Length: 247
Image (tube, rainbow, N blue to C red; front, side, top):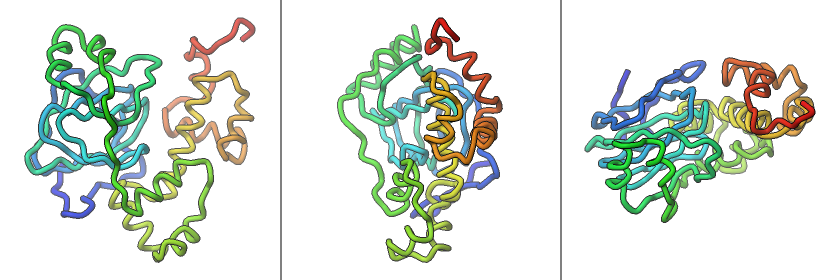
């Protein structure tokens, strides 16, 4: 399953859907120089880099993560990883409910967090305090990822021409960097925006579909099932903190 990436972007294994993986709280060692194909996790979690490093590419962008960096993975986020030549050790922690932590940030003392996690992983996660940002990669695939993450629906052919790229080059190079085509990345970003609104608001599903750029509510439903395995109604019923007495 693991392959060695070439110097520039790495080589990700492309599948119709990202692999669904599980993670366990605690320390995890990543082998030197390997690539972990694009995958997603059923539950959210926080990865604290204790030593070494790796590049991660997901909806938040591409980041080179080293000791003291923290990556927050929301529920059903997909990403791929290219491990640096020295390998890496990370600490996986549960993602606290309702957290407002940024997607990627630095902390002052990862060793203290690791010691706290030995007693209580949830308490360790609650103790995370960002002290600075981690600067993302800044190549054109990252600019395109940022545009696709917005609700602006850029036309890919026009975007390629405006940036001096052939459409074929745009699709191929973006897929090398992020493990997925631009169109699929955009569809996933749209589904995540809708999923957040479904779980965190009482807005009608038809309104969410329109606001997030879906053709209609059935289109929204298909996208949410593809992302999560369940329809919007399931998530509405289980998102109790956002219910009102009249629902």
